[in-house]
Image 1: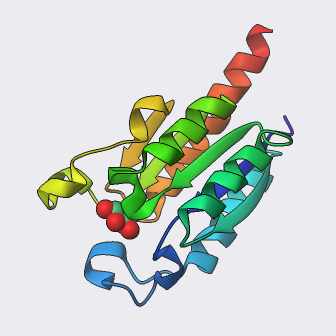
Image 2 (image 1 turned 90 degrees about the vertical axis):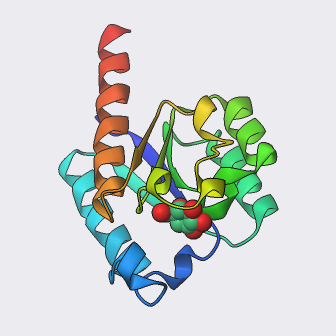
Amino acid sequence: MGFKILLINGPNLNLLGRREPGIYGSDTLAEIEARLQEYAASRGAELQTFQSNHEGEIIDAIHEAAGWADGLLMNPGAYSHYSHAIRDAVAGVKLPTVEVHLSNIHAREEFRHQLAIAPVCKGIVVGFGWRSYLLGLKGLLDVLAEAAERT
Ligand code: DQA
Protein backbone atom coordinates (compact mmCIF):
# COMPACT_ATOMS: atom_id res chain seq x y z
CA MET A 1 0.00 0.00 0.00
CA GLY A 2 1.31 3.46 -0.80
CA PHE A 3 1.71 4.84 2.69
CA LYS A 4 3.55 8.13 3.10
CA ILE A 5 5.87 8.44 6.08
CA LEU A 6 7.83 11.40 7.41
CA LEU A 7 11.12 10.58 9.13
CA ILE A 8 12.10 13.32 11.58
CA ASN A 9 15.52 13.54 13.17
CA GLY A 10 16.13 16.04 15.95
CA PRO A 11 19.17 17.89 17.28
CA ASN A 12 22.71 16.67 16.69
CA LEU A 13 21.63 13.74 14.54
CA ASN A 14 23.08 15.58 11.54
CA LEU A 15 26.45 14.76 13.16
CA LEU A 16 25.93 10.99 12.94
CA GLY A 17 29.03 9.21 11.68
CA ARG A 18 31.43 11.43 13.61
CA ARG A 19 29.43 11.99 16.82
CA GLU A 20 30.43 9.56 19.60
CA PRO A 21 30.65 6.60 17.16
CA GLY A 22 31.12 4.17 20.08
CA ILE A 23 27.54 4.98 21.13
CA TYR A 24 25.82 5.95 17.89
CA GLY A 25 27.77 3.98 15.24
CA SER A 26 29.72 5.21 12.24
CA ASP A 27 26.91 5.45 9.68
CA THR A 28 25.98 8.94 8.56
CA LEU A 29 22.39 10.13 8.64
CA ALA A 30 22.36 10.21 4.83
CA GLU A 31 23.41 6.54 4.72
CA ILE A 32 20.71 5.54 7.19
CA GLU A 33 18.08 7.56 5.32
CA ALA A 34 19.06 5.89 2.03
CA ARG A 35 18.63 2.41 3.56
CA LEU A 36 15.25 3.35 4.97
CA GLN A 37 14.12 4.78 1.66
CA GLU A 38 15.13 1.52 -0.01
CA TYR A 39 13.13 -0.47 2.56
CA ALA A 40 10.13 1.85 2.23
CA ALA A 41 10.20 1.42 -1.57
CA SER A 42 10.34 -2.38 -1.15
CA ARG A 43 7.07 -2.06 0.81
CA GLY A 44 5.53 0.26 -1.79
CA ALA A 45 5.74 3.17 0.66
CA GLU A 46 7.22 6.65 0.36
CA LEU A 47 9.61 8.10 2.94
CA GLN A 48 10.31 11.83 3.20
CA THR A 49 13.13 12.92 5.50
CA PHE A 50 13.63 15.96 7.71
CA GLN A 51 16.30 16.93 10.24
CA SER A 52 16.42 20.00 12.43
CA ASN A 53 18.31 21.22 15.48
CA HIS A 54 15.38 23.49 16.39
CA GLU A 55 12.31 22.52 18.40
CA GLY A 56 9.93 24.92 16.61
CA GLU A 57 10.97 23.67 13.18
CA ILE A 58 10.28 20.09 14.27
CA ILE A 59 6.83 21.15 15.51
CA ASP A 60 6.13 22.92 12.19
CA ALA A 61 7.18 19.77 10.29
CA ILE A 62 4.79 17.65 12.40
CA HIS A 63 1.91 20.08 11.74
CA GLU A 64 2.62 20.10 7.99
CA ALA A 65 2.86 16.31 7.90
CA ALA A 66 -0.73 16.14 9.11
CA GLY A 67 -1.69 17.37 5.63
CA TRP A 68 -0.03 14.58 3.66
CA ALA A 69 1.60 11.85 5.78
CA ASP A 70 0.09 8.60 7.09
CA GLY A 71 2.59 8.25 9.93
CA LEU A 72 5.70 9.62 11.61
CA LEU A 73 8.99 7.91 12.40
CA MET A 74 10.96 10.08 14.76
CA ASN A 75 14.24 10.28 16.65
CA PRO A 76 13.76 13.48 18.63
CA GLY A 77 17.31 13.29 20.10
CA ALA A 78 17.63 15.00 23.47
CA TYR A 79 14.18 16.60 23.00
CA SER A 80 12.78 13.11 23.71
CA HIS A 81 13.60 13.65 27.35
CA TYR A 82 11.90 16.98 27.97
CA SER A 83 9.97 18.47 25.04
CA HIS A 84 6.35 18.80 26.11
CA ALA A 85 5.83 20.99 23.04
CA ILE A 86 6.78 18.18 20.63
CA ARG A 87 4.68 15.77 22.68
CA ASP A 88 1.67 18.08 22.31
CA ALA A 89 2.30 18.40 18.54
CA VAL A 90 2.31 14.60 18.11
CA ALA A 91 -0.82 14.26 20.24
CA GLY A 92 -2.45 17.13 18.34
CA VAL A 93 -2.01 15.80 14.80
CA LYS A 94 -3.02 12.25 15.74
CA LEU A 95 -0.66 10.65 13.20
CA PRO A 96 0.54 7.22 14.32
CA THR A 97 4.09 7.88 15.49
CA VAL A 98 6.98 5.56 16.28
CA GLU A 99 9.89 6.94 18.34
CA VAL A 100 13.30 5.41 17.79
CA HIS A 101 16.70 5.70 19.46
CA LEU A 102 20.01 4.33 18.26
CA SER A 103 21.30 3.77 21.80
CA ASN A 104 19.63 1.96 24.67
CA ILE A 105 18.66 5.10 26.55
CA HIS A 106 17.59 3.02 29.58
CA ALA A 107 21.16 1.78 30.03
CA ARG A 108 22.57 5.32 30.00
CA GLU A 109 22.45 8.44 32.19
CA GLU A 110 19.41 8.96 34.43
CA PHE A 111 18.17 11.99 32.45
CA ARG A 112 17.78 9.79 29.35
CA HIS A 113 15.34 7.47 31.15
CA GLN A 114 12.70 10.19 31.16
CA LEU A 115 10.59 10.17 27.98
CA ALA A 116 8.24 13.09 27.31
CA ILE A 117 7.00 12.15 23.81
CA ALA A 118 6.90 8.33 23.99
CA PRO A 119 3.58 8.18 25.92
CA VAL A 120 1.73 9.64 22.91
CA CYS A 121 3.51 7.34 20.42
CA LYS A 122 2.26 4.04 19.05
CA GLY A 123 5.51 2.40 20.08
CA ILE A 124 9.21 2.92 20.62
CA VAL A 125 12.35 1.05 19.49
CA VAL A 126 15.63 1.61 21.32
CA GLY A 127 19.14 0.20 21.36
CA PHE A 128 19.53 -1.46 17.96
CA GLY A 129 21.76 1.20 16.40
CA TRP A 130 20.62 2.26 12.91
CA ARG A 131 18.39 -0.83 12.82
CA SER A 132 16.13 0.82 15.41
CA TYR A 133 14.94 3.00 12.52
CA LEU A 134 14.41 -0.02 10.28
CA LEU A 135 12.46 -1.93 12.94
CA GLY A 136 10.44 1.18 13.73
CA LEU A 137 9.59 1.72 10.07
CA LYS A 138 8.57 -1.91 9.67
CA GLY A 139 6.35 -1.71 12.75
CA LEU A 140 4.76 1.53 11.59
CA LEU A 141 4.02 0.20 8.08
CA ASP A 142 2.61 -3.05 9.52
CA VAL A 143 0.33 -1.15 11.90
CA LEU A 144 -0.90 1.12 9.07
CA ALA A 145 -1.52 -1.88 6.80
CA GLU A 146 -3.45 -3.69 9.52
CA ALA A 147 -5.58 -0.62 10.21
CA ALA A 148 -6.30 -0.20 6.47
CA GLU A 149 -7.40 -3.84 6.22
CA ARG A 150 -9.91 -3.31 9.01
CA THR A 151 -11.60 -0.38 7.25
C1 DQA B 1 19.40 9.45 20.97
C2 DQA B 1 19.46 9.36 22.51
C3 DQA B 1 19.32 10.74 23.14
O1 DQA B 1 19.44 10.63 24.55
C4 DQA B 1 20.41 11.67 22.65
O2 DQA B 1 20.23 12.96 23.18
C5 DQA B 1 20.50 11.70 21.16
C6 DQA B 1 20.44 10.43 20.44
C7 DQA B 1 19.63 8.07 20.32
O3 DQA B 1 19.27 7.93 19.15
O4 DQA B 1 20.19 7.17 20.95
O5 DQA B 1 20.68 12.75 20.54
O6 DQA B 1 18.10 9.90 20.60
